[in-house]
Amino acid sequence: TQMSFAETPTGFVDLDRERHMKEKYANEYLKPIVEEWSGVSPLELTSFYGMREYPDGSFLKNHVDRIDTHVLSVTMTVKKLDPAKAKANPWPLEVAQWSGDHVRYEHDEGTMILY
Image (cartoon, rainbow, N blue to C red; front, side):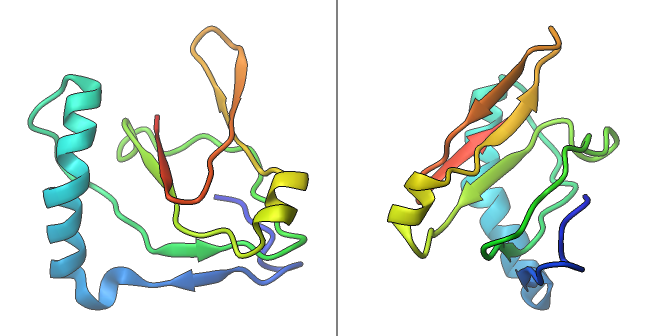
């Protein structure tokens, strides 16, 4: 993933310190949601990163997720520190569909997007 961490430092909460708890939560809470959404079961958890904080001036370049580990993905918006600023300057998740169309998904805090 190409982020602006050189220009604007991004925060990262590493969830690997308690790997067994991280994977327990992912398998117990997220995996069933993704399995139901995708119609594929059982799924194998291959990656689960920590939380990132993107302060003003951050960017995340368009990229293609790794096909070997990111066939199905979830992104969650835990908190937006300034909801008024977030509404005025949205930062949607942009997805390129198989058709080639690009779709932008707004994501309020407390939501997750499955793709």
